Amino acid sequence: MRHTWRTGLSFGVTSGIITTLGLMAGLHSGTHSKAAVMGGVLAIAVADAFSDAMGIHMAEEAAREHTHKEIWESTCSTFLSKFLFSMTFVVPLIFFPLGPAILVNIAWGLSLLVAFNYILAKRQGIKPWRMIGEHLTIAVAVIIITHLLGDWIAEKFGNLNG
Image (cartoon, rainbow, N blue to C red):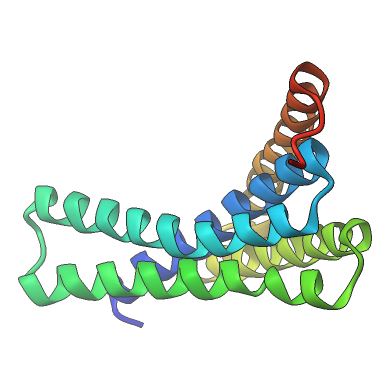
């Protein structure tokens, strides 16, 4: 796989999983609204995918190490991977009640993160469990912090459902 596509894919997958899980945890605990969580996931799939793609684009341009074509390959692969992986979290929201959908999505997201990190570590010739442990710790911390933040917002500002 070309460096440009690998860059976009690794950034997009990781960001898509962690950002979307954090958003869902916070919106769920703050609103208990399936519409709010679904809307948040759809919004993040589009807006944050574009934002991250532009961030990669600017970083690659600033590095001045890649051709114009390579920069756009990184940009497009970041957008596509972030968008597609974020969108996978919509499926459980469609087919399950909100509470179980959140749990399914957490399991799905953390499983994807483990699998992606395992493959990446093996390709780099390093022990996978250290990389997996670091990234799972960050993902779980994001989920817990955003969940607690959603609880705090609901407590301080009341039911945000209308």
